[in-house]
Length: 474
Image 1: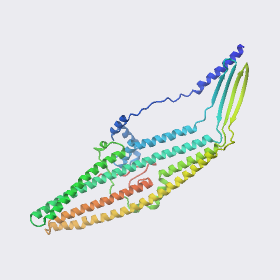
Image 2 (image 1 turned 60 degrees about the vertical axis):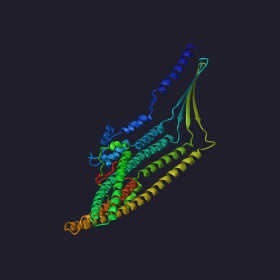
Image 3 (image 1 turned 120 degrees about the vertical axis):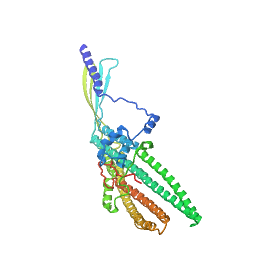
Image 4 (image 1 turned 30 degrees about the vertical axis):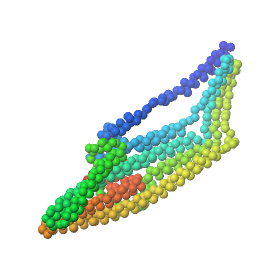
């Protein structure tokens, strides 16, 4: 009996040793991270473009910017700041981290289970058994392929988000700089209109013109001054929009000079070949590559469901001690595919794969249509810009010099010259409107191919292209 008790104690000791073995890897401890809305709002309000973290981010990503370091805050640098500050980038990165963690989950092997059944109340009964699950038909490999494809799609989503942020910054900066130019032209027009109203008032006082002419000039001056005030509001709103696109408060841009050196020099329509645009749109777009990754994940999911029609095997070796006798057993359990062979999940997975293929084709068709439409709009806007430039050149190079010559030789007073100056400023405003439509169409064309199309640009990484260099010049 002492020998039996000794053997029984050894069996109990073996069972107790299994727990430290199972817990040999330190478990992950929960760490609370509460969020206080007041604290996060205060942190957002304190964001500045002089933050040390942003400086390190700019230095780490300077390869995206040609001619680093830039002397002023141009589109390239503003886009990098937006990639650092804009909350949607943090959301995309977090979603990618979730997808990366899913790869770990997919690669995890099922844990074995152990069962201890000591005799109660007698010490002469003891049962120790294991159950080791064995996955069949390569399910683990299929899970890993699916998770990796979804992780790739999530990372491509980061690139798509980065391009959307760049597009928003480009649009906001363009609106702001064009508003600055428009405000300067309206202000110059108001000065000329004021000079013209003064001259007409003098002519009315001298009896050379009727009073309604001078009254109409004063009304035009008041209207022009109202337009200047509205332009001031547009400039302020445009600067706030730039800050919002970056993800910082408007005060963060208060003392910064925003630049875009090539503004007003868009690429010629002939430099944008339709075949190249369509090819880049279909091949370079990140959403196409994301759809391909999603299709690969759907295909892996189908393979996984097909593999699940074959049951898993559970191997269960065991040991029993009963009244001084030792028994070693080997158990084998398997689910019998009698009532179903996983037909439903297989059909669902096959349908999801067909849906993923359809989404890919729909995305490509939409992209081709977008690129063709954007290219047509850009060419039409370029033609409009050429016509506006021709009209402005006619005034500046022919009509206005002739008027100045007439004033110089005393053939007329300066009143016709002031009117020509107004016409020239109005022609500049017309050209600025045409330039606005050109740049908007170019932005749509860039969005269609997800690649900068202006001179001097380069793309260093998918979804994170740098932008053009332009200047804030009235």
